[in-house]
Amino acid sequence: MNDIISRVEISGFRSIDSAQIICTPVNVFCGLNDVGKSNILRALNLFFHDTTDYEVGFDFNSDYSKLSLAKAQRSSKQKQQVKIKVYFRAPASYKSLEGESLWVERVYDRSGKRSSEKTSLDQSPKKASLTRLVNSIKYFYIPALKGTSVLEYILGEIGDRNLMKSEDIVSLNYKVNKNISDLATILKGSSIDIKTSFELPVLVKDFWQRLNINTEFDEFSLLDETTSTSKSNLTPLKSEQYQISLLSRGDGVKSKYIPPLLKWIQQHDSKKFFVWGIDEPENSLEFKKAQESADLYFDSYAKNTQIFLTSHSLAFIFPNNEDNRVTVFRCSKTDQGDMKVMPLDDLLKEISKLDLADELGALEIQKDVIKQWRVQEQEMEQYRSRMLSLTRPVVYTEGLLDKCYLLKTLELFDELSNYPLDIECIGVDDGNGGERDMGKNGLDKLWSLRHIVKNKKVVLLYDVDCNKSFCQDGRVVVYGVKRIDNNSRVYSTGIEYLLNFPDGYNRDEFLETHKKGDNLTQKPNKARIKDYILSLDPDEQKKCLSHIKNLLLDIKEKSGL
Image 1 (cartoon, rainbow, N blue to C red):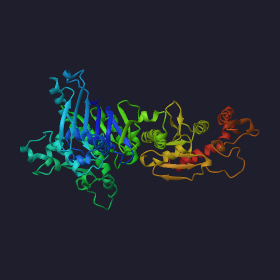
Image 2: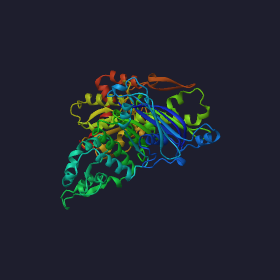
Image 3: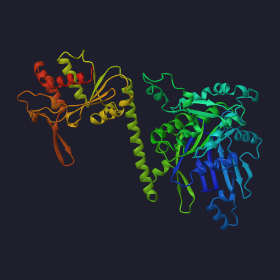
Image 4: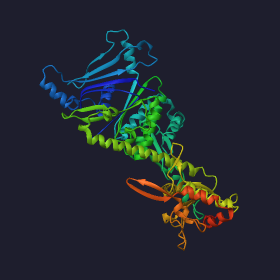
């Protein structure tokens, strides 16, 4: 865990008249557009590199806070200057600094340059150690738009790792692949589902910045498979002809490549402490991909990196797990036009919320939305896992009672061991020892995943009230119970619709009363009905379950098993 920066104080910089930020390993800044949240990252860039925006030098007229300017012009005592003060925690390797208050303040004035620097150890012989510590910190600022120059900058940093000597130019491609093979491994584990290869033009000046990162055309494997016919040329397609330069990819793909590249740099420079300042890492990523990206930042990248980032994404603003390593800050504009920075948790806990009622209400709704989405994603992952792990053909029923009736029918008619499909209920684990997503909704979700079923037949059995027609897509079959051509049915819905009840059956004896508001309603007690059916003698049970037997035989026939 890297939390080398413990506190940041900024005054007079752009939208920030004055701000104090208590830092954790991961610091997320959210807020409305144009509030100035990125200026926190740029202030750190100014502190570490004397530049503000990416590769843009400090310009006092542009970078000095307008509110600070107004205050200075109204006061004879206030100087017109930008101050950035960073507090540090002493790493274990800096034993001489243990217990010391560590901070460095850098001041920038109208000259456009750093005019002065103060430290907490100016009068101490330990100042050299503090200077060495600050110089050992590598701060990467990545703007929201990840253009070509940003990638070239990162690749140049890769070149600074001294991986090659100039006399090795003749074997560049071989050595690049050898030296960065572990980068491919990192990329593979970073939710980038695109095959990646690396090419280096030979004898090109600043060759690391000209490194070609080629990404394979996403549908290459499918093209190679589907364009081959018995009459066509069966020679495999050449993957090298289906490469797309990363620089030609969209911003979403570029955004996903940058953190693994930075992580690889860190692995090859163990003497430095790395801090990232990344604007909108979710930029151009769809919602689900943004969640995958957030999980990587919080769970993987933050292990060895202190991270400062801005975001509009719910995935970053509301982390998946309660984690004291992550602090989310809400940035808002005051009446005077400067920016206020406050931990989001503190903001949501405030007793008086009238001034921010609309925004806080939206945040609460967003928090509920991302929570519900994550629950749904967990459920869908259970469904995916279930579909991918099938070892036999299977019939999925809407509920546990349906499964019970089908299994009992197979047992009664001596078909249990011979029936070619397993019988399972659709529900998924609700995390509390029970199941949820029974019924039509669960079957619909499995149908949405039909494209991943490659080997075993899957039958989705819908009750009669769903009015489903038979259809098949690939290995997945939709089978809807059909209406029986008579009016003798005791129940009109559910699996009970198929039951043939004995003469004298009184449905009123199997009703249960439910209270909904001020109203009382009566519904069949399905568990009691099942117990009644199973209490009958075997011959009576067979009569009751004869329609279910026919249903199972029809499923078997239409499934081709």
